[in-house]
Structures are given as structure tokens and as C-alpha cells.
Amino acid sequence: MEALSSLLTGFETALTPLNLLWALVGVTLGTLVGVLPGIGPALTVALLLPVTAKLPPVSAFIMFAGIYYGGMFGGSTTSILLNTPGESSSIITALEGNKMARKGRAAAALATAAIGSFVAGTIGTVLLTFAAPAIAEVAVQIPPSAKFALMLLAFVTISATFGGSPLRGLVSLFFGLAIGLVGTDLQSGQARFTLGVPELLDGIDFVTVVIGLFAVGETLYVASRLRQGGANVIKLAGNARMNREDWRRSWKPWLRGTALGFPFGAVPAGGAEIPTFLSYTLERKLSNHPEEFGKGAIEGVAGPEAANNASAAGVLVPLLTLGLPTSATAAMLLAAFQGYGLQPGPLLFVTNGDLVWGLIASLYIGNVMLLALNLPLAPVWARLLLIPRPFLYAAILVFSTVGVYSLNNSVFDLYLLALFGLIGYGMRRFDFPVTPAIIGVILGPAAESQFRTAVQASSGDFTVFLRQPLSAFLLVAVLAALVVPQVLKWRARRRKA
Image (tube, rainbow, N blue to C red):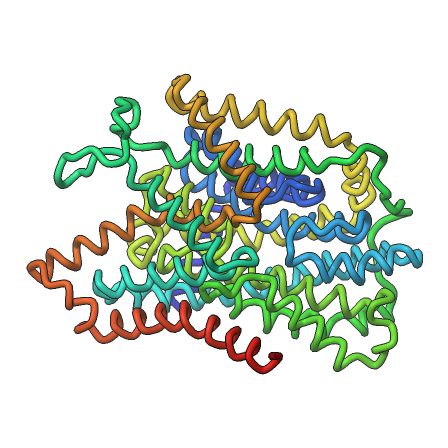
């Protein structure tokens, strides 16, 4: 009941005219960037970090929440009409949805994706409403040694999950951790990794790193792969809609996809890819029309889209209660929290209850707005796919440059932006995942702080990490996450040989 009371307070915050306006701006921007190939919610939040620095925190996070959910809604439009999944979690939607569109059923595919996203997003937000406070109450009792071990587990599992190679993920992570250490050590006063450059004594602003690696690097990469010629966009006639048979075949996949997506999103390294593929496999087995799969089955769009959106809600559970980002967009939201001097975690519900509950309440409101925006305006969003890509990429580079310069009015920051942009491009080019680096930059200082606190509390005894039961268990999990997959691969290769 306490959660319901807090949620009502959150609605009082989110339903003010100004915050409703920011929610509308967020969902519109989110749908827009979700529709445009190569742009996603993580990149958009990164671009907006400098702009929102002057906004009240509640308004800024309500807008970010709208972008986060809106990106999920918009991504399905690109997958279905253009057969271009913006993220790996949208591959299944592109596989089945585009086949439906080519058979003249684009409206039904878009409708089941939008309504499924609404159902999954709403149920996921309800679960978030009740799960987050309960986890926060437990998390507040976790000692610093276990918090450090938990962050270590997040580092390892996320590095192993993003990208095709765990080794590349770990290299990316250590690069991010090293960048996070640049500056003056606040305890010893010693300069770290500054290379004698005075401008680096205060450290590197994480916004510059995030925009450089993610926005500039990603834009350079997708622009370098741009091919001339018009996009093969399937035309959409009329609004997104479903008939009675489509409803009958969609509602169960929506619920099953939600049940799969939320728990995967709530655990480190769960992500959205695994539940979407699991949902597709499950629907194929349970369907009365298995022969349609691979040729445009509506269940193959409804279930994975619901799983994708439910996982998005689940990602907010570890972010808000433990301060652990488990996706690229969650890492950007964590950066936004830190930009306001806030640290997500169990105490956030106590110290900034208005912000947290306003944010959760805005998720319900945003879901309704997104449904209203996506069903009747589907033809409008589809026309955005015709925007020439060079204009789009140029606008992102200009926006990135102006945003970073506005932080400190520093030309040196622009040099850093260009450097990290080139590094980000190189990472994408040679298949090094960018997300572990960004999480290393953002979460590394917090992990260092927890490590130092634990060692100081134990009077310099490093065995505290092994003597504390939860910490020891998490360290064993870290070791297992590193060793077990390699052992399984070695056994598989040996069997084949």
C-alpha cells in the first residue's frame, strides 16, 4: 500500500502541465529517433545531456523516460516497413513484420507491435512499481564490500554480453575504467593519467566521453556504411489497425512476451535479445499456424515486441534500486543522474522520492501517449523514413559539438570530443562494443569508492571481500561468469573434434 500511496504522489508530480509537456516532448522525440535508422534512445539521451542540464531534474527524467519508451515503439516501424532493425532486439520484428508488410498487412503488423508494446510497457511498469521499493529496502543493507562485488559482477557480465567476443568486451570495459580514473585522486591529491596536461587535472567530463564514443562514433560509423540510392520503404495506407482474428492471435503472445521480457531485463546481462528470441521460439511452438512463421506470422511480431518492451521496464529495476545500468540507454540515464549530483540506489527512494515516483508515474502516462501517437499517426512516422540520411548525420554532429562546447565553453573539450569520436568509430569498425566502455566511465568511480570504503572499514584488510558472505558469493559468481562459458566452449570444440 505504501507503494500505491507513493505512486499517487508521483502522479501529482507528473500530471502538472509543465511535466506533461516534457513527457509529450519525450515520447515524440523517442518515437522519432526510434523510427530513424541508426539513431536510438541511448544516442538521443546522450545528445540531450548538455541541453537538459538547466532543466529541473524531475522534468528532465520525465522527458528521458518518454524517449526511452518511445524509442521502443518507434523501432518497430523501421523494422516492419524498412526491414532494418535498429537494435539486435528488433531482428525478429523485422523478420516477421516485414514479411507481413510485403503481403499487404503492414497496418496489422504495426498495430500488434504498438498495442503489444503498450500492454508490456504497462504491465512492466506495474511490476516496477512494486518490485523496486521492495528491492531498495533490501539493498540498503548491503555492505560496501558486497556493493563492490555486485558492480564487479555487472562489469563482467555486461562485457561478456555486449558484442560477439567477451575479450573485446573486457578490453572496452578497461578502457572506460581507465578514462574514469583520469584526474586528481581526491584522497591522495596525486594526478592520475593526466599526461602532464593541466586541463585533465579535473578529470574528463563523462558527457564529453559519452557523446564522443556513442553519438559521434556511432554517427561516423553508420555514415561510413551509407550506400547511395533510395530506401526500399513499404508504403502504408491508412492507420495501424487489427481485425478480430488479429486480436485473437495476438493477446496471448503479448502476455507471454511480457512474462519473458521483464525478468530478463531486471538481471545484469539479461538484456532484450534473449527474451525476444525465446518469445519467438515459444510462439512458434504454441501457434496453430506454425507454417506461417518465416513468412509473416502475427504471433512472431506480437510476442517479441512485448518481450522487448517488458525488458525495457525491467532494466529500470537494477538502475533505480542498485545503481547498476544493464543496457546502453540505462547507462545514459545513470550519466544523467550523476550530472545532477544524484546516485541511483536504495537511498534514492528516500532522498529523492518525488523524483523517483514522478519518473515511474510518467512511464504510465508516456505509455498512453505513445499508443495515441503511434496508432493514428503511423503513416506520418513512416514518412520520416524518407529523410535523406546525410542531413540527419550532419545535424547530429553539429548538435554534439554545440552541446559539448556549451558545458564549459572550452575548445579543449572539442578536441576531446573529436578524439573520442574517432575512438568510438574505431571500436564500432573493429567490433569492440561501446557500451562496456561507457559503463566503465560512469560506474568506475562509484566502484572505486565502494572498494575504498570497504577496505577502510576493515582497517586495510583485503580479506573482507572473502569473509563477507554476500561479497564472497558474488565474487564466486564473477569467477564463474568468466570461466564457465570458456569451459563450455572448449568442451563443445572437443566434442566436434
